[in-house]
Length: 234
Length: 234
DNA sequence: GAGCTTGCCTTACGTCGTAAGGCCAACCAT
DNA sequence: ATGGTTGGCCTTACGACGTAAGGCAAGCTC
Image (cartoon, rainbow over all chains, first blue to last red; front, top):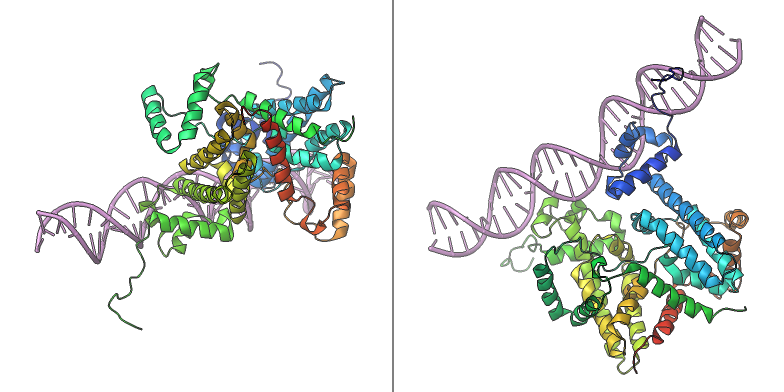
């Protein structure tokens, strides 16, 4: 239908950008386990070895993914900060970190990937440079700013180290959960008591008893409060 | 030589414990990449498939490793706290976390492994129960204690999320480092300034410009100070 | 002694990343 | 036009990996 002048170009010529974009889409949809060279190639209508003309191997592909996410975070954070001019340093940082968090929620695989990479791609540094700018502009010395970066840890990138995993859903019915709870209470009394206490007066138990957003911001405030006392000037 | 009564038992019968111990030794020595079923079996003088009579597959092996490290941390933390009776909650927690840190320094692969596991083995929960005990005993409500656990994140397990990686040694000579520094300063002025500032007045430049121990304790103090204000009683 | 269990081994399958080289269309200078 | 060169994609193949299926031999119970 329509003009045949352009005929059908059987496919556009494949490139690093196209490969990365396709990889991100694939991982968003099916998780990191689905990201193999063969599978990604198939997704692009190509054979596996063809990818090596545009990417320096699997490791390079993963670095590219991290860089892409870092770029997404950087622009989101920069825009968030620009949208609210004239606020104090901690509000600016909070905006940055929460912007980063929305990006991470779009790419749930990113935290694990980022912390599994043996080296940090360049894009991540660019993001940290922006945080430093905010800190220094807010009156912090480079020494304290440096420590602040370490203190923020992964929070700066929008995610918190999850030590309590969801345990893969499981425990569909209440009786199994109850049994698990009893077993828990025997060996781990305080953990059991905490779960019990938090579950009872939870405002929204459907979301599970850990509201990540609340925890995230609580930790941020702890750190911001502490840092405020180390600030040089006003 | 000597009595042949016992003959030579060609090897003792292999067990989950022996397999885990050997796996830890292997990973301590050569890193996670060296840990394959075949290699571990060879280390035990056995064929790969024999491991499956004692371990439920590779994933189970990794969970076993995490559990073993968690147990090591738990006992180290418990002992550290027991050795200093009558101190306040934050000192007790600091002792626990620093004890965990010494264990993690013995097993540098453990942080990455722990955060890459899809689920958390039981031993980790036991450790967290001890932390909760300390917090509650120190006058915290379960609600705040819960948030404190999230705030501590990986610090409670003795390691900090490393965002700045060592970049694989590299840059052997000063001129290459200098060139990298100049390139850095153009695009990332604040990062460059921070590195410069921290390098110049570093007391011990040989250790690199990030003293992890100092950063670790700095962050702990930030969090402890913040939590103190949320404590219920004395 | 027969039968069963236990502990280890052998073989084999499918998947992974990727090294080596082949094919073919597009482009260039002649 | 034409022969050479280049670059994008494909084919084939190798050596890992985790592990399913089954074999074989020693020691136990009755």
